Image (tube, rainbow, N blue to C red):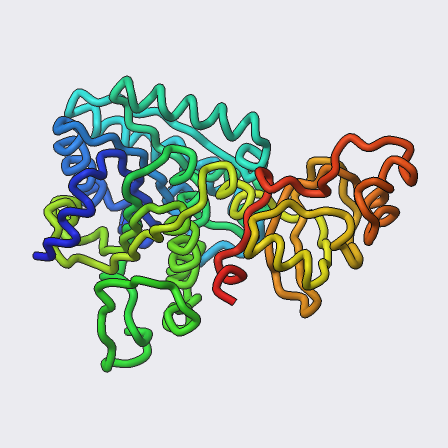
Length: 381
C-alpha cells in the first residue's frame, strides 16, 4: 500500500469514473456481471458520502449485439444507428442495477457544442451539481446519434477529461481492459512493465502509449494519456486501471498500488482557463514576436496589437485562437476581442492607434490575460 496515494485520495469525494467499451462488453453485448459488480461498489461508496459521475461507453456495442452484428461497424450512419438502438438498453441496465440499492440514475447525452458554449458549459455544471446533491448518479455518454465529429475524431476519454473540470472532480478513474500504462505494448511483447506512477507526462511517456483501440472502442491507451494530461493540468489525480478486476474501486480508494496513477500538477489552470485550453477548438492563429512571447510567458501580460506579426484564419470577436511564436510553436490560446479582419489592420501598432485605424477602441488588448491560457510546454521552454 502506498501511504502517499492514500493521503492524496482520502479527500477526493467527488469521483468521475469512465468505463470503456472493453470493460462493458460481453457475449450479450453488455457484460451484465461486470456492470453489476461496478454498480455494487459505486453504490457502497455513495452511501459513505462519495459523489459519482459515470462516463459510460457501450451504447454502440449494445446496439450491435441487438442487431446481431459481429464485425466492427465502419460507416458513420451505422455507428449512429447502433448507438440509437443500444443507448436505451445501456441506461436500463444501469437504472435497474442502481435501483437495487435505492439509488436513482440520470441520463445526460452531450456533444462538443454543449461544452464549447460557455453558457451551456455552466448549465451542464449546475445540472451535475444538483444531481449529485440529490444523491443521483449521472450516467453520461456522447450523443453519438447526432455528434458527427465526436464519433469521427473524439472518444469518451476526451469527454471525461472535460467533465472533470465541469464537475470539479477530486479524482478521475479510467477503467479499461488493461491494468494501466506499460512501458511497452503488452500485445506485442512479453517484456513489459506496468508503470505505477507518472509524475510528469513527457514525450517518452506518450511514446509508450499505443493508439491501438479495442475492437468495440474508440480510443487506445494514447487517448487515455492525452486525457490524463488535460486532467492533471487542472490539478486532479488520474488513474488508469482494469475495470474487470473484482473490487477495483475499493482497492483504489484504500491507496493500494493499483493501475497507473498520474500525479496532479501543483501549479494548475483555473476552471475558465482550462475550458479555454482544452475544450474550445481554435478558429485561427496569431503569430507574435519575441517581445510579446516574453510578456505572455514570463510577465503574465495580455496580448497587445504591437506584438502581433501576422494572422491566419477567419474568426470573429470572442472566438478561441492559438498564439504561436516565430518558430510556429504554440504559446497560448485565448478569446479574441477583435475579429481577424480588424486584427490584421492593427497588427504591429501601439494601442493608441487602434481608434484611428478602426474608428473605435473597445479594448486595448487583442486577448486579455483573464481570457488566455498559456501552454505548460511554453512555460518550460
